[in-house]
Length: 400
Image (cartoon, rainbow, N blue to C red):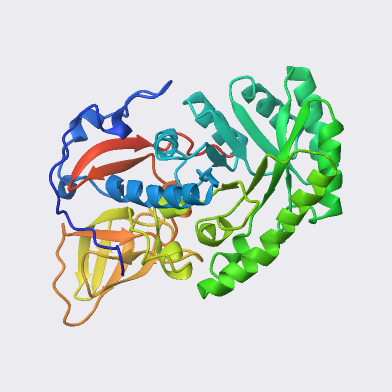
């Protein structure tokens, strides 16, 4: 499995102020126990733990950022995989113009910790959500989206009451059949409504081609992306002919950034998950040859009740085991995960495999990063084979 090595080679990292993930950021204290863990060898980290190889993460992020910069397209990575202002800040340092969030509460966390431009890429169903968005726009640029006049009406009332204009994108259905108005005249009409309504400001369009993430071969993915995202570009032209400026055309995920980022007329791409990598992106999205697996979960063998049974201290409260992929052991062969219970993992040891003893450490690639990271309070950031930082998931549990 390309890029999947999790060995402990590398020089020890020194705990210096130059470590970007250890620099303080506004309003959040140093994580409890951080000072005691800095410099600890990887093999001494208590388990279960969520590990992030910071060098791999930064190389992955730079690969996306550099590719998009070369196309003249901005990078606004989605934060749903990490919910961490420290991670978001590092992505900005590596070239991102801002961050994409799923929830208003996540945007509040990001703004509280210094992120100056946020896109909340979901519709809101109640006025109080728009009141919170309006309040955020007193401190930062926080953009939201609409696929109905109802969203425009609620945003307008909130913006007027707060004395701000809430920036809005028209959300288009580009084939995923989840949210969004139809491209073309429906998109233009909603853009017109936003433009003439007080308390809001029309900024552009967004559409998510998530149904194309796993399309393969690459040439077919590109063909479908150009066809379906092309409808959003045509909508942009229609709206511009109507006299409105379309500053933003936003979309793209990790599995499509390499094709959607090539489409003339796109202005920003939201790909973020590939900074971490997991089995879904690596195998289902065919990205394993181009990106490194930066995110792993480490567990300890706690019981060997039968010759072929191995029990560990990580269950489904530690890592997910669902439709997007099953975790896989990467630091030793002959072990197959049978199932996860709440606090235990049950593995099968193949006949003839190297012996496994109580106290041995097992390292896993998550099946899907989004459904694994949110189970943890922090990433244990590694440089080489030593702890460089604890990185809090400050947005964990922020669902409103």
